[in-house]
Structure formats: structure tokens, C-alpha cells
Amino acid sequence: MFDLHLPQLSSKYLLELRRHGKLQSKHLLYAKRHRKNNPALGVALNVKYRATKLKRTPAWANHFEIKMFYDVAKVLSRGGVLFHVDHIIPLRGKEVSGFHVENNLQILPWYKNLKKASKFMDKHEQQTQ
Image (tube, rainbow, N blue to C red):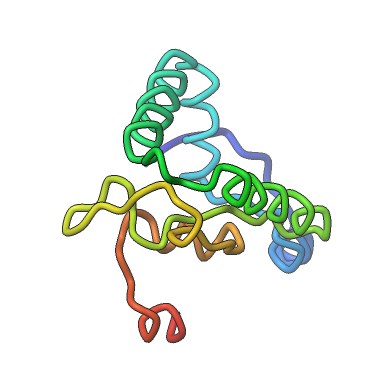
């Protein structure tokens, strides 16, 4: 579907890359190139997300504890796996929408957060993922 002109790599080298999590799919490479060629779109999406987060942050939110989640995720990410701060109940969910408050945050590895996307999962669903 997408002709990215990728160099031919040996299957042994591809397996090694995949094992170390450094192999990106053609889709990811296309998305990366698209973001690079369309920076205004990325800025617009970022602004929209930040505005939503601001609207969904009540006055009674504990900003110190919220910042602590982001700091902990940053420290954990130094270990080699990128960690994200996830909203348990999404800010812009289809079924429900949560607040940007400390008891609606959790720290997840990047791959689990991207798999969850903007879905609301109860504790049982999260444990089976």
C-alpha cells in the first residue's frame, strides 16, 4: 500500500531488530514521515488535546500530585521502556469522560497505553490485557 523504499535487510538482522523492539512497521514509518511533512497538523492535535485537558481539570484538582505522576513516568522511562501517564477514564471517551485529576491517572508502558487508546476499561479488563 505504501511504498517507502525501505532497504532490503537480512532476515537475521530483522529478527534482531524485532527482538530489541527497534523494528518499526511500514505504518509507523509512514505516520512518522506524515507528521514530519505536516507539522501544522501535529501542532493542531496537540493544542486540541491540551485544551481538552485544561477544560477537564477542576479547580479542586491536586496539581502537585498530578505533576508527580508525570515525574514518576519520566524517571521510569530512563530504564529503557517508555512509560506514559494514562487517564483511566478517558478525557474524550465515547461512552464516558473523566477528569484530569490524580485519582484518574495511572502509569502504563507505552504499548499498553497505545493499545488502550481512548477506551474505558474496568480493572478486570485491564488485568487480562
